[in-house]
Length: 363
Image: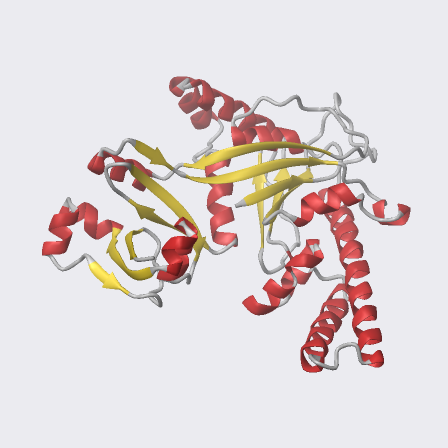
């Protein structure tokens, strides 16, 4: 999973990036609209992986991972100047979702570029830039489809072209109502067909309201599907993350207790990301490696096999599967097999969160 941390200049994107990645990238530096990206890969810490590692004593343990990118270069009025730069747009289009940082904190050292702090205004401003970008892309596709149908270009697949035109007209209508495309209840097939168009408002989004250390949480009227809103004390969370990275457990626990922090932002945003994007974990275990894998909820056994390696999906025979809780309760694979909890599942088996799977295959 690859998530982009976005926001207007001065929102505190890099502060949140550091909080989520235990990093120490310089903060408070505006890129002045210049495209730039910081990237970090973060382990999805899962106590189930730790327990399985203790049980199997593998040579290697691999957690699932999330890639965060801190994206600079977004500004108000981009579409009035010809649209988002191509390099920036290409990067945004390649992300699985956004962490949209919205400023709600005051700072004399770093005044808001617009002269006042207004999170609702800033959220709407960047939303509008993305909406206008999508509208231009959708209108271009509608024009191409309409012209092609009129000239008979699609005579061999006219029905497919008409269905696509109908879909894009629906997208255009939604954008015209100033609603993000993620508000639509699209099928997996429709979503797959739209992947190549770089539609930014289609991406799942976590809105992070970046508040001050002693500031009360802020509620925004922002209710869209595939969207979640949360408050984070960015500066404090960055400092806590750095204490965690240094292994200073005593100071970390003291400051978390003092400020009433029950969960580090890294863990909170990962949890929200998994829920928002409909993801879950399954595990492979053995003497060589214990590993966590990320798949969509509702994915089948053969799709899980493909996540591990395409060859496993091509030669799929069956999936030996045991629920994590059953395995831990029984204490070993042998005991799970003896108790009838190690099941033989076929291609269409729907994988459950926490399943421990061994793919049997033949090429």
